[in-house]
Length: 425
Image (cartoon, one colour):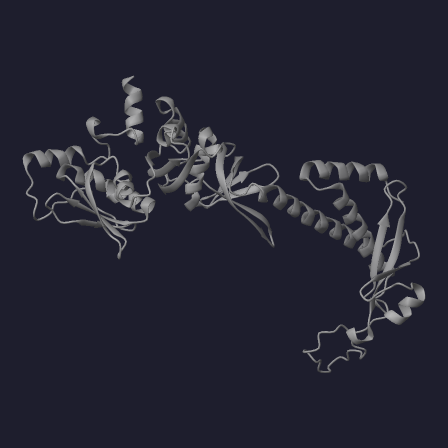
């Protein structure tokens, strides 16, 4: 009846290419045969199952009846146009589908309510065109369901990890990445600003969501997610992978600048140095993957004052006052450090506020505090009424519009120091 050689070849090919187990494929064939039999020879509400023997190619068909108690079904037949009691959720009794427990015990003594009894049906080998088309549709549906379940099982375990893929196409700003057995979607807002992608280009991204919907499985990718930065450092720094160095907090503005706070479980290990690497090789590798995004690495501290001072680097902070009730911190800096502490467009203090969780105000010595929160855009140059610009301060403003600090004010905690040291050597 069936060409077993062709069937086995197709099953093996689908199992290898799409990752569908062989048992699922045989189950799909049996379901399709049962559907075709019921459409061609069966009765309404009849439950038909098929057993396909892969060694001989023969098919056995069975009718299944569920054992029920008379109180579990409704005996009245539904009449067209008659109002139905919606509160009664019991199914209507159908002799092709149900079997009372008293009658079932005459066939099998130890049968119980809810069991299924199987009755053999006459074997048929001739199916019409409509039945065959229905069987084809059932097989395709079963294959899609099995493939979807296989993709969820494979990539569900990779959620929260970095995946590799090839750029497939770009549509309306959305990037479609071929991951092998599935396609990932990277929305425009999850891409690093300024990056350009071409079809066929290899790309790494953070898989932050695996969603199963009516139209398939959607794998959500991101290169702008803060976790992407963490995972890149985890790949480059063995101390993070083995748990010796812990990433406590990350504040990131993709494509521009990031701040990362780390601590070490072993006092003998320098957490900042572990991430920077010898001559900055580790942090430079991460920066190149992110398109030159600057990264400030600081040591995490339980003391809010110390943590805020370090988070505002490369600026030098003179003192920090905390307002516990409003969860606000006021950082005092020298006049020539004010623009550096605030950063271009308020980026430096904004990232520091995200990293520490405190609202931070920048106050020059003898001046009025500049209130800066995570949402505030702060201009680079600020002049307070109490501060009279001098020739020296004007030069300072002109030279310190950029975020890089003079060589003597830079610390090893910043990426700028790493780059400068490498150039000198």
